[in-house]
Amino acid sequence: MATDDGWVTEHVRVEGRSVHVRRSVGGSGVPLVHIHGFAISGTYLMPTARSLAGRRLNVVPDLPGYGRSERRDHVLDVRALAGALLAILDALDIDKAVLVGNSMGCPIGLEVAHEAPERVHRLVLVSPAGGGQNQPLARGLGQLALDVMRESPRMAPVALPDYLRFGPVNGLRLFHELTLFPSLERLLHTPVPTLAVLGGRDPLMPSPSRVGEVVRLAPEQLAVAVVEQAAHAVNFSHPEELAKLIEAWLDGALLAGGAALPAGVRVVHLPGDAV
Image (tube, rainbow, N blue to C red; front, top):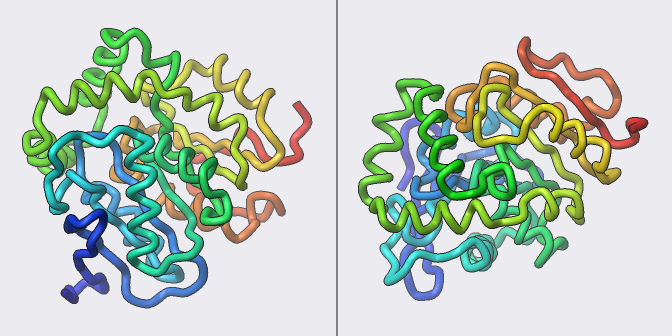
């Protein structure tokens, strides 16, 4: 169904169930596929997707069991969601994509890249959650509560209906699984060119010293940037800054040193940097 803002909404069949997808009209090149976080739909990713839709095709699915997609009998784990995302790409006839994940969407994107690197042109990891910095569960829940207070108030009416629909028990179970996902280890062995974007005010992310350690261990194809005033949901709170950063990276302007990045966006590592 076409809308008046240059987007189409449609449903595709994945494993016999309906999956809701938003797709921009126009644009060219390798599609950008946006992957949402846990217990929430892709709606909050739309500000960044709209900002990127001028030149490139953008696709924002609600993963199986989320948002307007058909409910599932059980909550899918990260690995199963990665398989479902590949099935969504197949249903949309997308052979290769730029995956743009946020929060849990980052582990999903990493799983797809490791499982099927030929399907991933490039990988953007915005606030990659999971791992030691979110453990034990009580610590992770405290970080999550602090992040809620740091997010834009405009996020609440977007996120709350999704969280209520997903259910607190399912949300707690999935968040616990997410804290155990080895995001850092998977990131440091990414098989495709990757841009990691961190929010400077995100309590779910590692400390600055830990980020520095990651940078020292970073593989050749990893770039790292910080949006200084953002919390966890950078895609919603700072869409213009994030979109311009992604565009510059995809265009190769970051590597060439010719990117005019917005105020408050800082690149901390580029491929080829001496460490």
